Amino acid sequence: GAVVSQHPSWVICKSGTSVKIECRSLDFQATTMFWYRQFPKQSLMLMATSNEGSKATYEQGVEKDKFLINHASLTLSTLTVTSAHPEDSSFYICSAIDSGGAWGYTFGSGTRLTVV
Amino acid sequence: DAKTTQPNSMESNEEEPVHLPCNHSTISGTDYIHWYRQLPSQGPEYVIHGLTSNVNNRMASLAIAEDRKSSTLILHRATLRDAAVYYCIRNNNAGNMLTFGGGTRLMVKP
Image (cartoon, rainbow over all chains, first blue to last red; front, side, top):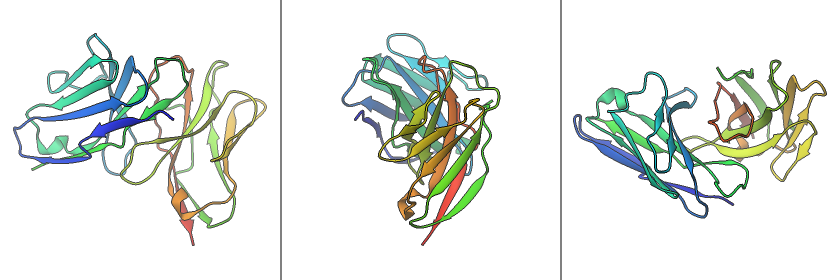
């Protein structure tokens, strides 16, 4: 089945630094990828929709200059948390749709970001 | 707005069937009903989806009410590994995002 690889699975960084999270579709091409954020004991909240070769579409309240999304190829999207602060500590999850038509949304295993 | 309603939590005994309900009374004719589950510290995992007819796969069964205003995910024999948060989601399969509600936290007792 379709596999989405997300890396790293966890990261600890200092306040003010930037962190890049990668999301790769391993055995299919993904024109569209989604980035979610999940705080403890809460559900997933969509941050942005990433389309290959174009600018991402951000949900209301999500700062595009802080959460930089790049979807330069059909198999890779990256989320960079810039100038991270402790309140950015969360579980970040990507999801991808198979452009080839196979049904389904495949999720990465998530990245636990802790900003200290 | 997830537009589905699920109980916050449910308990089950191991090896027994589990019926997880979902209310989607305002569902449109083109919306599919999807179920995903999320194990602790992992991304969501696809379980099953359907439109009108009941569906079965190796993981579960999905029973959809005739009026499509509700559905039930059925785990035929719960195992400890089935302990997770189960999300019922409406989506028209047009490639837009999945909107997650609160889900049901399933606890399985040995």
